[in-house]
Length: 278
Length: 332
Ligand SMILES: Nc1ncnc2c1ncn2[C@@H]1O[C@H](COP(=O)(O)OP(=O)(O)OP(=O)(O)O)[C@@H](O)[C@H]1O
Ligand SMILES: [Mg+2]
Image 1 (cartoon, rainbow over the protein chains, first blue to last red):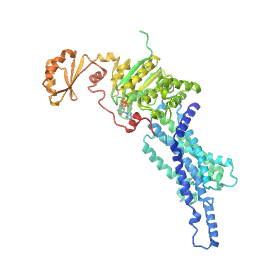
Image 2: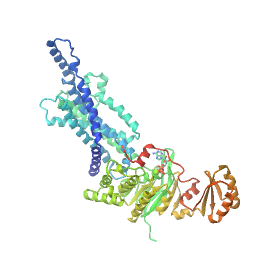
Image 3: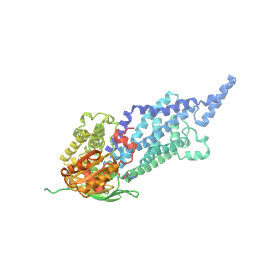
Image 4: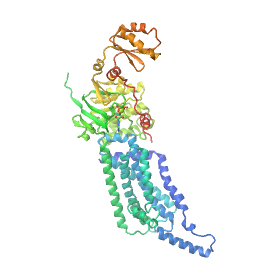
C-alpha cells in the first residue's frame, strides 16, 4: 500500500514538474488578485477627500485606519486580502487536484490502474498527497510574493506561526480535494465537472471570511460561512500571520479539523465505492 | 496429446446496460499457453468481455475463472495474475516509456533494482528499449501499442488480455506485434486477444470464437471454422445494378441456389471455382463487369455465412475523445 501510494504520488509530481507552463499559469490567478485587486483597493485613500486642509488630513487618515482596523483587524486591506488569498488559493488548487481525475478517467489511465492490484484507497490517497505537496510548494512561493508586495506580518512572527498557517491551509485542502475527487469519480463528462466546480467554487469563496469579514455580510450569509472550513482556516491564518484577533482560537481549529476529516472520510468512501461499482 | 490445463473458464458471462444486453451468456474455455481470439465486428461485446475478465466491469450474470480465481469474488487475486492491454491507449504521454512501465512494475510489488530490471526486460521484449527514455508523446502509433503491451507484461502475468492490439496500425507494425505475441506464447503465457481483423485472428490464434451482438456464434480452430463453408466464393460487381437479378437467375440456372445478392454484389458459392469460372465468364460477357473476385475460405467468409453481414460493415458511434486517444494518445 505504501509503495503504491508513493509510486503514484511521485508520478503526479513528475507530471507536474514536467509541465513548465502550468507552474506559471497556476500562480497568475492569485498574483492577479493580490497585485491588482488587493493593491489598488486602497480604502485609506478612497475615503480621504482631496480639498481638505493638511492639518485635518492626518486626522482623517487616522480615522479611516481606525475603521479599517475595526473592520479587517488590520489597517491594510491588502494584508487582509493576501492572508485570505493564501487559503483561497489552497482551496482552488485542491479543487483542481480532485477535478483532474476526470481527465485521468477520460484518458484511460484510471482504467489501467484499476486493473492492477493497487488498493483502491491507494489510488485515492495518491491524488490527495500529490495535491497537498503541490499546494505546499505554491503556498511557499505565494507567501514570499505577498511579502514582497508588502503584506504586514504581525510583529514577532515565528516559524511556528507560519507552519500553523500552512497546516490550516492543508486541512482545508484535504477536505476539498477529497470531495472533488469523489465527485470526479462519479462524473464522466468534463463540461459537467467544470459546471459543478464553478457552481461550488465562487460561492464558497465569498461565503467565507477570506475576502471580507463576516461582520459585513447579511446574516444568512454569515450562517452559511459558519459551516465553511475556509472561514476557520482564514481566521487561523490571519491570527498567526497578521495577528488579527480571533474569538476562539482553539474552537476554530477543532471545527476546521472536524469538517475536513469528515469531508475526507466521505470523499474516500464515495471514491472507493465509485471505483468498485463500474 | 498431453492433458490440457485450463487457464480461463467463462461461464454464462453476461453484461447488461439497462435493457441492452452487450454480452449475452457467453461460454468458453481457454487452455494454458493458448492464443485465443475473440473475433467480431464493432459493438460485438469484445471490450465489454475483456472489461469483465479484467475485473473493472461487474458481470450482470455469470462468472469467469482465471487460473481458478473468480473474477467476481476474487478480484484481487485475478488482478495479480493478469496483464491487460486495453483497446484505448492508457500510457501517460507526459512521461517516458520507461517511467510508464516502471510505475506498473512498482504497482505489482516489485521494488528498487528488481522493478528496474523488470521494466528493462519488458521494454526490450517489445523492442522499445531504444526509445525507452523518450516521452511517450513522441512515440508512433505502433510504438504506443507496443508500450501498452510492455506495461501489461512487466509483472510476468500468466494470462494476458490484448484488446485490439493492432487497431489502426499499418501492415508492418501489425506483423511486428504478431511476432511479439507469438513470443509471449513461447514463454508460456496464455493470450486472449480481441480483433475485428480476420487476418489477425487467423494468423495468430490457436482457437477463435466469433462473437456478434454479444453472443458467441462459432468457436474452434481457424481450420475448423473455415470447414463450415465448403468451397470457394466468387464476388461479382457489375456496373448496372438493375442487371443483378438477371445475372443471378442465369447463374442459378446452371447451379441452382448458388448465387445470391449481397449489398450491390453477387455472391456465388461453389464447390470448385475452377470449374464454374469458364461458364460464369460466358454469362457475364454481355455485361459490364467492374470486378470479379474469387475468395478462398477465410474467417471473413465464415462470419458472413453465419450472420449474413460483413465483418467490418458497421462502424460504431464516433467518439471524438476516444478517437483522439486511439490515434494520438493521451494529451492534456
Ligand atoms: N457503458 C456503456 N453503456 C451502455 N452501452 C455500452 C457501454 N459500453 C458498451 N456499450 C455497448 O455495448 C456494446 C458492446 O460494446 P463493446 O465495446 O464491448 O464492443 P466491441 O466488440 O469491443 O466493439 P469495438 O470493436 O468497437 O471495440 C456496444 O453496443 C456498446 O454500444
Ligand atoms: Mg472494443
